[in-house]
Amino acid sequence: MIRGIGWSGLVWSSLVAPGFSRTIWLILCFNRACLADCMVTNLPIYLDHNSTTPCDPRVVEAMLPFFNSAFGNAASRSHAFGWQAEEAVKCAREQVAKLIGAEPGEIVFTSGATESDNLALKGVFEMYAGKGNHIITCNIEHKAVLDSCKHIEKLGGEVSYLNVKENGLIDLAELEAAIRPQTILISIMYANNEIGTIMPMKEISAIARKHDVLLFSDAAQAVGKIPVDVNADGIDLLAISAHKMYGPKGVGALYVRRKNPRVRLTAQIDGGGHEKGMRSGTLNVPGIVGLGKACELCLVEMEEETVRLGSLRDKLENALLQMDDTHLNGSKGNRLPHTTNISFKHLESEALMMGFSKELAVSSGSACMSATPEPSYVLKALGLDDELAHSSLRFGIGRFNTEEEIDYAIEQVTKTVSRLRETNPLREMHKNG
Picture 1 (cartoon, rainbow, N blue to C red):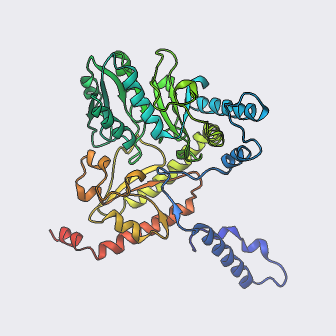
Picture 2: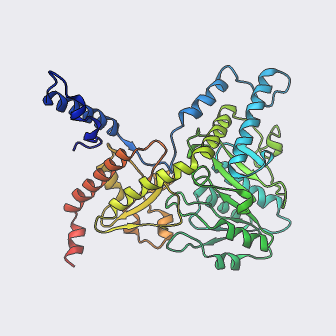
Picture 3: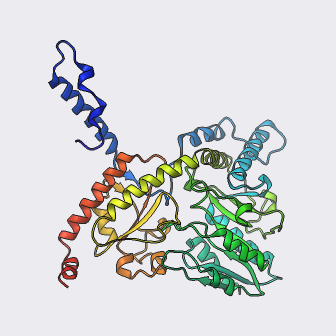
């Protein structure tokens, strides 16, 4: 059978007619197969949805009017153009809040999760300086969190970096033991961007509440992919990014709890006092509308999409793990439905990606770290040695991927791994002892 087509698509018995030969039927079948094959091989196939996602066409459609006809400044209160923009922002704020179980007034629009991370960490550190100067985080956080913590340390703050277990989860007993009287914030990501591991946020929150410590979570990888409820999860601050959930780049949000407890922040950008004084700057109305629409779509489609993507992920993962010397990184059960991270022992991930770069788009880790030759610090934190960390690939399946594309990806990765291993002296040495 030609890849990507079932012969049942054209049935011989239904086409029997005077002058219609079986040869013509076979030609039609072949042409249809070729057409499907072309659809599958619209190359390269994108499997890096943890890095970014394509804008959903429905999101683009919602945004377009705000680039031209409805171009007003949302802060302009004296005419219809401003009112229209303000109303659009209000609607988007409601859409974002609804997705995470928050109130619209608790949503602060930013330029993305990196800015949200910076505002949450630095804003809390400055605002609560009278209470303490100690923050707890973990060693597999996104660089936006880790680098913000390093900056805080330079300002005299103290930061404890929790280690993770080989499944990518923190030890809750170690978290509680790290809390001091001076601890003002716990910062733990909701789901990891490289291995997809989902942290036990409710249990983490219970510890934070017990000790009267605020809880912040970078949820850029989780929101829109799995159910997130800031009240059920007990989260006080939460970072969101539009481009991780089929929205535009350059826009995100920070959830800031208003009661039980009320969280206060010191602004990191001074100016016109936008966003209740927490984030000055003219609002990116088209981007905010896009974020809102992306949240609305995720809320409606998440349940069905989770099942479909989980099935595709499992098909890809199970097929690749059939090969010798392959290893799944992170937690198998407690992770994002669309993510898998696999090590191919004795092979360099860069060589693998070069081997199928015209056919597949995948990554060896976080996009913001792709320029560095160092092995993934996330995989190293799991206990992988340099060789195994350098041999790992992350696959992120998305909304517009098809089963035919997954079949094709399996074929391409399997062929490339086999070809490279045939000429790899390290593997031969290992096999021969």
